[in-house]
Image 1: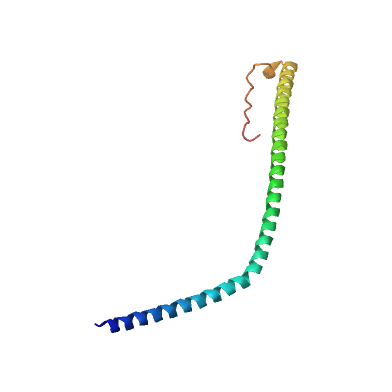
Image 2: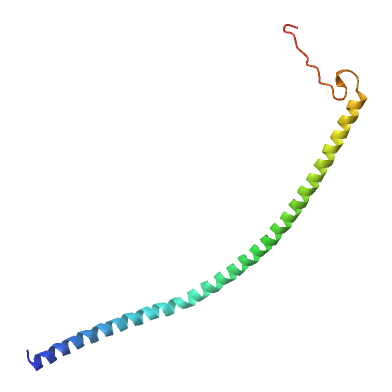
Amino acid sequence: MTLEALLVVISGCTLIMTAAIVAAALDLRRVARRIDAVLPAADRALRESAQVLGRIRRLLTRADRVAARVETVCGRACEVADHTLERMTALRTRALESLNRLMGNGHHAVGAVPRRHVRRRGR
């Protein structure tokens, strides 16, 4: 191969590479124009999304506060119910003890074992 043939091959490769670069640049320009056309709509959508997310964050913060209040109220209600049940149990125990003292004769006496009533068949 001669030097002239080698220069022709190099020139051909250079032209092909130049054409490929120009085609890529044109494609890039078309893509950039499309992106530029979409950017304003995307900017509006991003701003709206940021506003919606801000509202959601505020709502979640409020919901968290409300949940904490409800938890406090429920805890207090459970404490009151527990205290009330303890008092009712003590009152029931005292009432049963008083009843047993009042009816202390027969099988109702304090510490007595209750009688078993047997039912006869046919009666």
